[in-house]
Length: 284
Image (cartoon, rainbow, N blue to C red; front, side, top):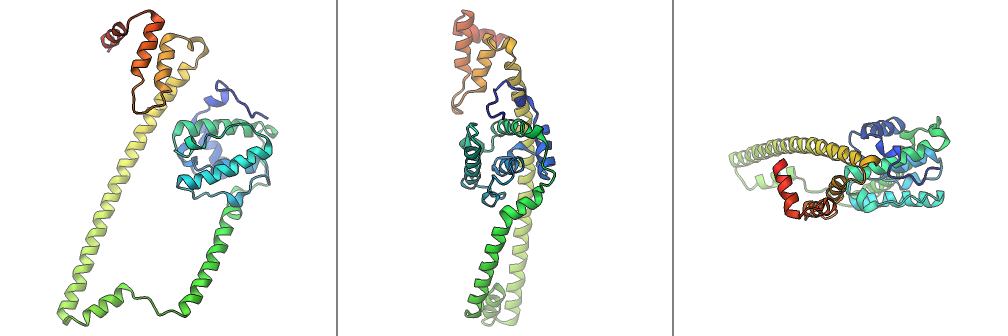
């Protein structure tokens, strides 16, 4: 089994569109972005398809949105890795952040690993939709039915709740007919205006988010192309490539790695830092 796959392996040159196509085809999903798989649920079901009966699907939360919910999915994944003696480290803290590059690399590894089992032949009897429903939904449905029954029992012994209409009626008893009518109409118009304003604001926010996501994907693709180019064995040790990698792989987001890269480049070329900076300004 391909549990240890080197960073230069062809698996890591598989594009995100191919990865998304692989996931959607196998699991009958409709993912459009790599980040949508950050919860770990998709990865768990891929392992469930590859090794039937090993993954406790009832513990997998496909509706996970918060990090603590996602972490629970990765705990299930780690248990599966332990059972199968897979030594691939799970960098959960990075994956749950939803960063495209981290999740893409893990999914690239997962695809290569699953393809190495039985030649990548999919279990024909595996129904991904039914498996998700049986694994994760039945438990919540049963739980909700129990809650609804208990609520029904409690409601039989409790007085009916005071609704907004009841409050309006009680309040209108202390007002004249004209005052009560104008009060109700005024409240309704204000509520309608607020709903329309909030709906407009929500639409504007959605447009802004879509634009930001497109811009993010655009620059991510360019950075990924630069990274792949820098990983070419023939130029891997060139000073300029080493300097670019220092910028690409800088961990601290609060500080620029440009100065460190310039210093590294100047040492390699035997130039002073000022000369490198002047050369860079001349080229720009």
